[in-house]
Image (cartoon, rainbow, N blue to C red; front, side, top):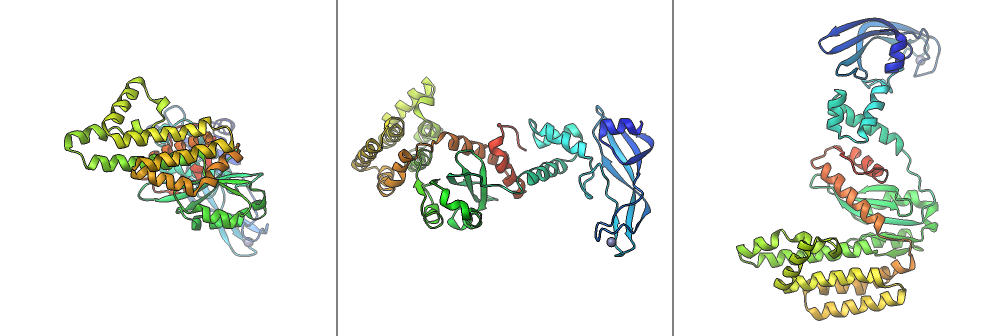
Length: 405
Ligand SMILES: [Zn+2]
């Protein structure tokens, strides 16, 4: 092995090559640094000497085929005669003092990560799972160290449940670009406090905010962004309707005999999925279900009716009439979840109709993003590194679906 081939295959610079050892499936290259004078990292003085420690440090390089490679580097200390500090000499083909892999090994791991899970990358590169995770984390942290608000005009605020361990988080997005602007812990206005500080000058340009209906973001928006419209958009209305319908399904199920219970248990998706997305068999099942469980049937029809308002109403006035009619029907049904929904609709009519005022706020992007987050959290089940998970959420809009863990 020559220093030239080490440079071209492993990105090794600033070192002299000594010898190679071969142990089983590992190639070990002995290197030592070429630098003869370094500035003190503490006081920047050039009055330093380099002192051999007599020790070596092993740095992982790129595998050659199935073989591991290790750069065994003789370490030195930079001793400063001005301030007296003694620090470790940095290795110029590593990204910092503490990593034990070359820059090229990290870069290759990131390339593989584009379509492999961390576990698969760890196996392929023969590095530790934790190392691959840290490489990705460091890269994402650099990428999202400063998240700029840019020319944001439309915000989306959402709560996301990350599982038992991590609880809820609040995600703020730019609805035009799809970028994630902020992630806060918890699901109340409190979670948004740090974001308000960042908004400052941008606040007056925000035209509308689409929010999750189920919680208290509206109070925060009214206070922090008094000029912005609050929009209860399509996606969140249907989400709330689905949640309430699912409660009805659960309570219906609890009243049933075992035999019937089974029948209803696996039918959740029939009720929650959009009607046009069901296969013809599933559509027949839904018909049967609607006939057998009258209240659930009515609720499921009313959900489709609600969705159709968004599809068909092409003016503010028409939408208003349709929502009011929906409310009357819901009241008349006497079904609890529909009555609840009717109350919500009446109470938040302005927010619902704001969807027609801000035609830009389509739900497609939001739904897609929420699906991605859901998928990420499922991947991240039992996940401990919260910061890494948050960084991955910042990166989500730029990702196609791939295995995360
Ligand atoms: Zn110094």
